[in-house]
Image 1: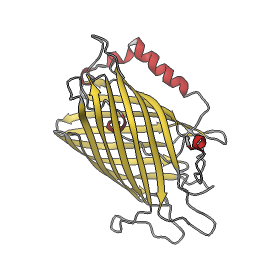
Image 2: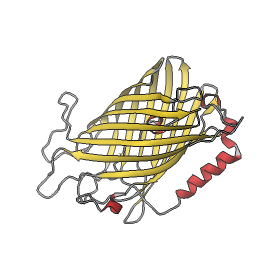
Image 3: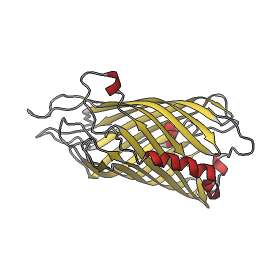
Image 4: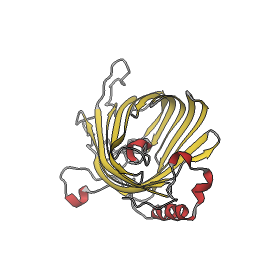
Length: 318
């Protein structure tokens, strides 16, 4: 979620083929991570999945990249849930950036990442849902962290410390319902497998898992206990190049949450659309969907969201 060079075995991510996915060492590593999935621990619910460049410190880094500040990433994103919104979200605005502090021969890297998420909802009774014209936001979430990665036979092994905090801009929803101020810290690990290539079709699979309830240890005051405290996140990013300037893509993220009160929850997000790359800049337009059974934004009351709409993002990586 430090590297030692092994001669002739370090694979360049841009040249890995599908057969390399099945090298015994990679299968063993992935198996060890999957074993963690079987434990009974759990996770905080309100979480925004990030694109790979935000949390993979080796994303955009090659052996001949500069040692200091070899790569950076910036994404501005807007989603309007035109087809199916909820009292929690009518639209979202996100700004997400990261930069790799240092790297060594494409083997090890360290990165900082930061994101700001502006949200609408939940709405109080008689509130009018926000629109793109009104630009009324009533919740702000911050997300930032330190990320490390090292290259092992083309797979990127990850480690991270990150913090997430959501800040509703009003404390009271109704006379009996109040808003939470959910916050969590995440210590996680993970793996990004080498890209899978089949002609112009490319896919990347990753898995992240980690403990996200450090406030229990710090005995912090006035921090609500999340319904879960362990993250299991599976993701895939697939793309198909129709033309150098036109790429179809699909990104899917699935979380498995073992709940404190028993049982499991499976929040997921997905995007499908087209990317228009131009050198190191890219525009994406897409259909977006979000499914979450409880955002935890209302105290002691499940607050589900079922969102479907359109979005676009602008990203740059020097």
